[in-house]
Length: 180
Image (tube, helix red, strand yellow):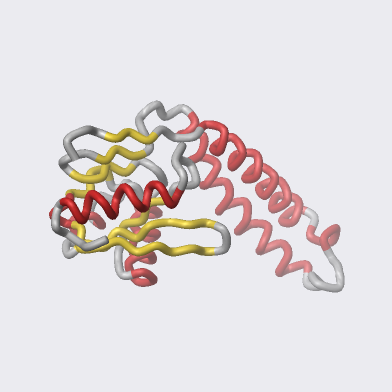
């Protein structure tokens, strides 16, 4: 790619995810504090409700911290240029993913969330870039589950997932790394 393609983070999408995360933190907080209010034929055990609430507060609370950081982040979410793909989309972003390290991409979907798995022949190089222990564990889980520690999530980007996938596939084909 002779030109640089910069894809911005979508502040509207990030605000939506922050609101949704706050709702889940609040529900988790009350579930942990007052599990008896959530008893129903489906949820009968207050201990399970309380533990679920605590887990929900921790999980969504961490997500909120990340999202709040992204809301104030003015760097592009993704840069595609002659060097490779510079990823700044999620908590496990590793920065520059060099074209020569990419062996292929794979489209995956979990519920309604679509993401690209970037396969590499040097996974340790990217695992070593984890920003903290939580990111490292998430990347290791990605590696176990999908065969690569690197994933690109388009949910917070100002680009359609299919367009992003086409651009990356085209660039990989131009570099002779994979065929379209």
